[in-house]
Length: 302
Image (cartoon, rainbow, N blue to C red; front, side, top):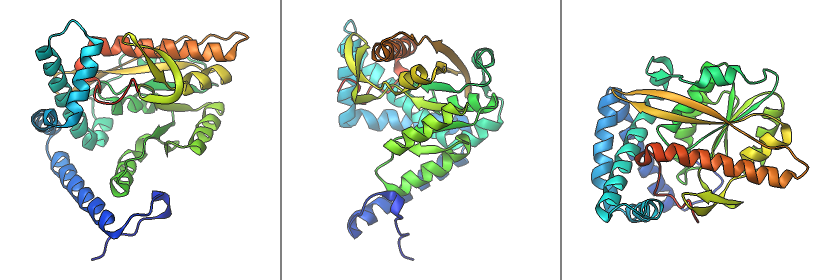
């Protein structure tokens, strides 16, 4: 049985050896997905959490996570910093396992919509909405709130380098982004703009580094942040919202959402910069509530 051919959408031409390695990694990913998907949700979450806590602290990203935590919480001792980073890995392990139970979660009563209905019902019915989240709680579940409120979300995501795994992740999440799940590229931005102008909802994660973005304060340091959500909200005069996920005991979750004020003055660029700063400040506030439930290991500050 030969390897499946990579389609033109993969966007890369790889050697046979590299392709074989990618496919072997994909098979390992599928095997892990099968095991975690076959287990009950809480068992899969607990198992994955234990594995991540045992393995991840020995990888180089642990050092980066500790450095970011120490800079953001200077009062913590090195032992406390290390403990928070280990808790973070355990939390990420839970999110990873729960990703293979998304369809079950969509149909279950494990997700309390919290403040989502009240806020979304208060928004203009004939206008789109920019709905942001962060890598916090279990960010995968935020889109379920939009689905249950009758929206057809359009989302954007960062491609995974392994094209086989990337295709599998797309298939797993396609049902949740009923207006499209798009890779991060210029044409995707235009698709999202058209969707929100037509009154649709777009779903974005807004806490990653953006080298070409706006420098705004984040945990006491300037961080390059995406102005895209604020730009859409300001230019098209649509609401900008930030969602968060509260992890409850026994595999349950509660969603929260707040509206971010977007100024409209004669200075459009200043309005976008201020709205971006407000959005990042709100994200920081959420993280400070449960700091071990945020992805400290990525290069947020450049």
